Length: 249
Image 1: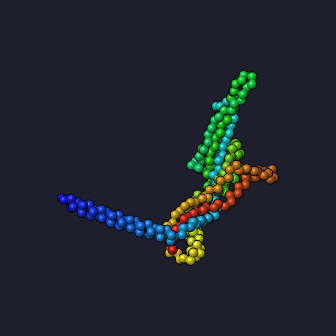
Image 2: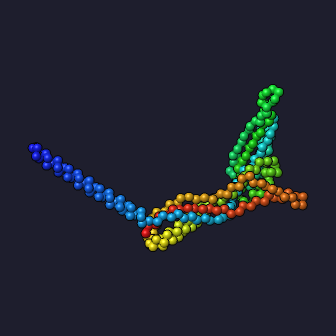
Image 3: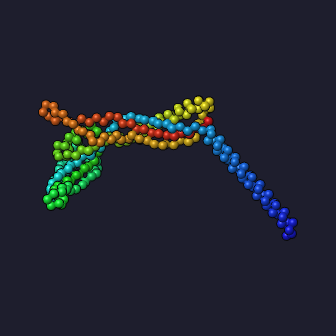
């Protein structure tokens, strides 16, 4: 191949490459422009729906704390009272699967002796806590009274929940979508454009399936020399759903 031929071939290659880069760049430019156009023709809004419902299940943490200078005796006493607590729960209709141990601890308490300049263990404390699921929520007060009557001296919290939340959550989702639609229509009206429909919907969050009440004070009132049942007010629960919806106009 002569020198002149090589120069011609080289020029042709440069021309082809330059043309290809121009075409490719033009295609990318068109895609970027289309993407910008699509994004500029959308409205993104969030929507929230809330459904209120009465709880049907209670979760109570009850237990026993015992103290003794002897660790074995503290454990034995705890086990004896805890057996009575569990038996009482079962007599009130609580099933084995609805009684779950959540805490068991044995720890020593120390004091410092000024005379010997040493610390010594003066007492052992044993704590045994179970979480009880009360599926008949109207029986919650009776359960609390029952375990207290046989020696439970630790009732740390009560939670209320709904055993099956799917139905309520579905309603909340419907409300959330309707809420988002109303916002999008208001924005479109303000912009003077017409919505063409939703092009993207995302479920972004939910909340409120359980109400928690910690450190509840279970006060008792005395009427006619008899101990009245512990009053329990469950209130209402809020089940919420949130969505993000993108509309095209």
